[in-house]
Image: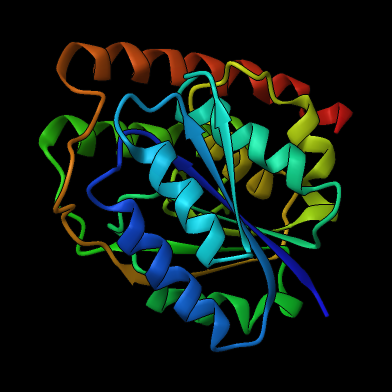
Length: 237
């Protein structure tokens, strides 16, 4: 049986995390999957850690890893590296419940046909700056990695075959702001078999987006530079 690691970065989600864990465990248990949810608490300042450790008692397949705050990109990259050692598949999902568990099985049931499977954020409501960043991200991948790659290059809803991506995870710098964009570029550049399907994207009902306005612009510039620079390393992977 394939072993599945779910990498979930968590930051200040005390209002949502219990419901999110309940939903995901309930959904995954339907399919008798051998899975572990690794919730990486990225230095939350609220009661997120306390809630997660209480949930570990209720859900033996949940593991909470407390770490110093390093940001979303660094956190998921740590999760990918950790999980690729012992799990056949890695699935990344955010902890805000914007993309629900109901779309997961549409990816999982097709895993044997592909190396990489992703949920496209359907019905997503974005402010204009984020729309522009998404468009530029797609163009960056097409220009520097390959034309035929995934559409939603930074989707936080991706299922990846560990043996295919393990070496890549180790090569991506730990301070990369958006490693998921680079991973999408890798898929395009190496012409891997990938599958995409729409997954409904809902508005979050608790908390708020942590990167806004000027911080968003600076983060986007950093991400574009890192993504372009990393393209030169692909020949060695």
